[in-house]
Length: 253
Image: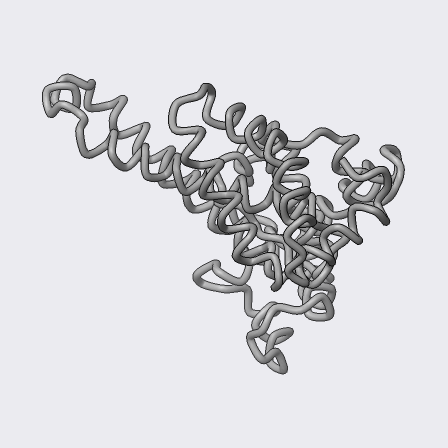
């Protein structure tokens, strides 16, 4: 691996310019990392080679579009986890299509109904987290992507801190602050989607153009934090219980 962050960035810049040796160096240095991440995510070697190949090919195709060469490592890991997520989704879909009908028929009705309700609720709250993420600013969205990688076991806190160019302790502070803002945004989304909606909240929204922004997040959450009506909407499942089932929240480039 390049000796320093500056060296790593210079290799990426050279590769973006079409330097064949720089491209070869990036592949040589990062292929083992990508393989390790994919292998761990898939729980074994099955299909890992295909996913690794798809990851590296996509990274090389999209390399010129990377606006921040210094963020190459987290950007590459983002692509890897996106490919893993796509692969797992396809694998689950294939498994569901081939589930023997007898297994479904033999399942207790009550258990099946309870499981279905749980899945619906998980899906609903995961959707809320995705929509809540659109209320974060660009830096928080990038940090959310890195924290996603850490939560699903694909990135260590040390690596997360390195991607942020800060200490582990300060990275922990930044993650907690981001999570606090995401939790506020979850409550905001729940209040906005409630039917009927709180009348006072509707009055607050009269001048809103419907586009999420940090400014309106502050204005809306100022209301929701003190409104007993808006606080009733749902008992949110902890983020860690939802984040692993989400499609990757991609870092902005």
